[in-house]
Image (cartoon, rainbow, N blue to C red; front, side, top):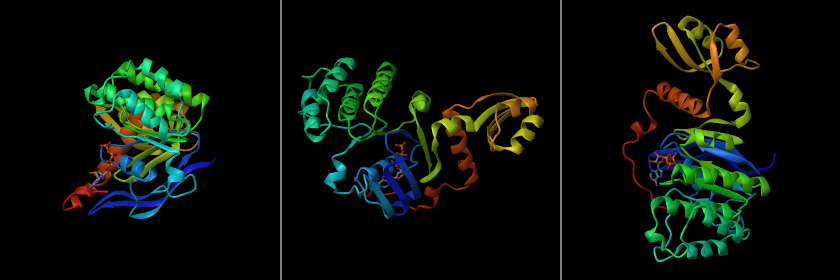
Length: 308
Ligand SMILES: Nc1ncnc2c1ncn2[C@@H]1O[C@H](COP(=O)(O)OP(=O)(O)OP(=O)(O)O)[C@@H](O)[C@H]1O
């Protein structure tokens, strides 16, 4: 495995608030990584560090072997599409794309034009007259057509309808297959992108809860149901993440011990089904929420905006 980016024991503080707390991870080359987590978990902050928009309070971030902050050699290989990205108001759509074309050495104009048609974007309309979804489509087109060796999409969907989102996933996958590169995607629409992901990083309250390949993650948890006593006994042999009980019947999300699979649940007299990525993420995030009686922010007297 070759790393496109490595994050070594990174802490990011905004005055009293710790947005990232001792985070270490690797973004593997030519993979699609999903950056998941609840609101305020620290996803955008991590992306800002990877793209040189911020410098960590502690620790080290390396992208393409160098520190990204003010490092042109690294930054010209990165495309970062932010949530609700804005463009200069006087720009027409085609001006925004033309500006992007000058920024990214691997820009593919044919791809940009074909995506314009897919998303039905009017080239001559000024960006200030675009709907929210159309504005997001401009970001998605730039992100894909940049063919940047490291492309990050931070919740790129604001206002984008289901058809346009599906178009994004399809075109991303098709272009990635032909031109492998490193893609990081943060989203709350987990089930929609679950099949796209090769790696998953789950962040919760500034810490990494999960950092694994999507394949083994899919096999690592089961949702079991049956008589409460049997569910409890089964969960006791593995790791219980979440449970719901009604009458004498329980349904639980269980993280399996080594070598275990659905057959073990069946042998225990339980019905089982694979746990969807979204269920797993919710269960793990809720588990840490109940484990920690007070959220970290409760100990922060005041949150203040810290300018760059
Ligand atoms: N400039 C800032 N000044 C102060 N606090 C900040 C700043 N930027 C982020 N934070 C705080 O850091 C934490 C992590 O924020 P971040 O934007 O990284 O979360 P996120 O996982 O991207 O959330 P969301 O899914 O809601 O976009 C939050 O508590 C946020 O309020």
